[in-house]
Amino acid sequence: MVTPSVGTVVLVRFPFSDLTASKLRPAVVLANAERGDWVLYQITSQSYADRNAIGISNADFVRGSLNKPSYARPAKLFTANNNIMMKSIGDLSTLKLKGIRVSVISIFK
Image (cartoon, rainbow, N blue to C red; front, side):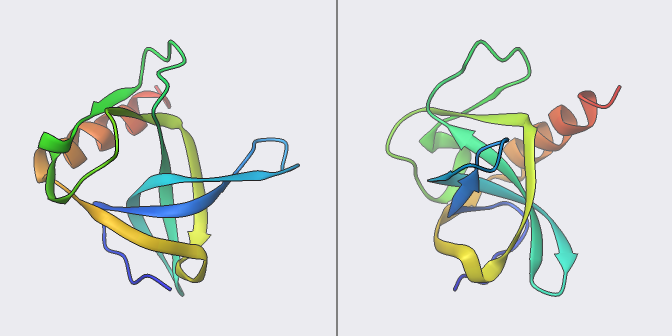
């Protein structure tokens, strides 16, 4: 079990949108949803030509790193309990987290 905080990058089984399966992948913790639940944002190494994707490199971390340059995808949000978070990978800088939050808000405009 991981005890995350906002801006932490964790490894979690991220569900496919049709809920048929899941894939272990990194995710950014965006908000505390209370009672051990957290709002997460998918990170992938593929851009998928997503115009809203935010690049993440190791320079964006104040602690930890990813294996390769990756992308945070604002439309891939979900809520997960900290009990299913496998481990903490690191913490993003305040500036990178701010950019990710702006991208999430932009998909609702």
